[in-house]
Length: 236
Image (cartoon, rainbow, N blue to C red; front, side):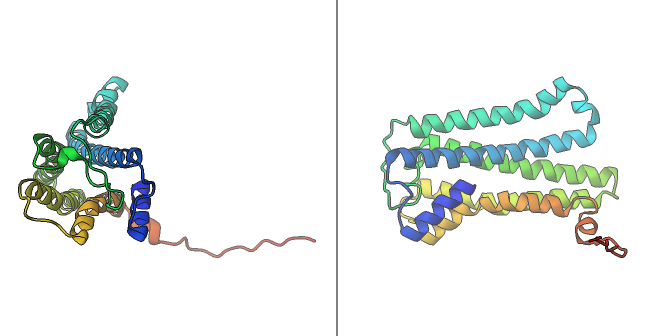
C-alpha cells in the first residue's frame, strides 16, 4: 500500500508514471493485484478462523493444528496470488497496450473486453472473499447473540467489519463487471481514481476498527495515571 500510494501521488502530480518502461508497468500491476488479493483472502480466512476459534477452542492446541489452520492457508493465499498474477500479467500472451501517461499504464489486458479470465479474477479475488467476510461475520453475530447476549461488543465488532468490506469492495466489483460487458460506458478520471482506491479504505479502516473494539482500549489510551510527579534533585 505504501509503494502504491507513492507511485500514485507521483502520477497525479506529474501526469505520468514514475518510470516510463514496460517492465515498471508490468511490475506495478503485478504487485498491486497480488497484494490486494492476499489482503482480501487473508481477511476472508481470518473471519472463518475467528468463527472457528470462538466455538472450537482446541482447534490450534498443537503446533500441527496451528500450522494447518492458521499458517498453511495464509501461505497458500500468498503463493497462489503471486503465481497467478505473474502468469496473467507478466507472462501474458494477450499483449498489454502500455500508456505511460495513464495510471497503471493502464490495467492489464486480461481484464479487458469482458474476458473469462477477467470475470474469474473479479469473482474469485474480490466478490467471493468479501462475501465470505460478510457471511461469516453475520453468522458469528447470530451465534453470539443466541449463545450469550452479553457479548454485544464482539457482535458489534463483527458487524462493523462486514459493513466496512461491503461498502468499500462491492461497488468496485459491480463497476468492473458492468464495464467489462458495457463498452459504451467510459468512466471519467474521478470515477477511475475512486474505484481504484476505494478498497484501500478497508485496509486503513480494518486496524482502526480492531483497535476501537479492543477490551478497555479507550480507557487505556485516553486515561492518564494519577499521582504527583516527584522531582529529583541533582547534586552539583
